Length: 377
Image (cartoon, rainbow, N blue to C red):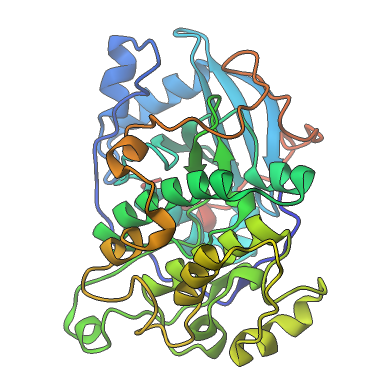
């Protein structure tokens, strides 16, 4: 699904925390489904495992809408309720062999505590002898990346819409001490109405409040993300926190307004680290002065002085002149008119996604040792 590579060195496992997950607001829901999605995510009992297997058996597999090196996302329909979902399927053997076990566990554990209108929702997880499963919202509008490539650049009004919704998503994640770490247009989906949904939390990280973390100002020392969007501290390996998300927001706004990322104008990834650390940016005329001033504050080299890094966090960001016309309550309530309304004909429409081979069912079975790693999945 993505066209830009990702850097990854290693990932810390997110702290385990169970949460209840209600059904989609716009879905018909049976009593059995309501009971199912309200179950805890950890310490899965045999009865819960059987319930999830029954829920999995009810799903009609329709079509793949995205693939990765060790998994894919397929659109499914619940035969009992006729609701559509996205089923994320990981091949256990490939996950372990690719050393992505902690990334997958981290994604599950982070998504299990999240409830926000601009972030994908997890309903349940399950596993078989071949696969790991995550049942998620299906977001039919496709990737923002596709629309950006078609349009070349966005105008300020359109950019403001998307940046506003993502800002609220970041504000929410940071309130839970979660750092997203992988903002890029490929990880921003549009729903049927055109509102954003952040997806792919495999590189997300939840901070642990221990004495050491407090001493280092809640910084962590893992490095992953997309080169174009990596902050200086990630390249340096000096530790990072929520400030790295605000950096990536600045990169995204720059790309929306100009059609290129600020530190990769020549589309040469090998040049990115040097350019980022040098802070060299050529400002195109398509970026107005208000947006430029906002982006500059987000792209400050020192993460401790970067906009959003202070005590007031997201409030500092939301008070910038760039957002002068924004009514945040309206943004949160999804009252703003989206600049792009995807051509979606029905809730299970897959026309906004690419075509993929349906060759995943013949995946190898996991060994007993590999299955033990996901006993509570």
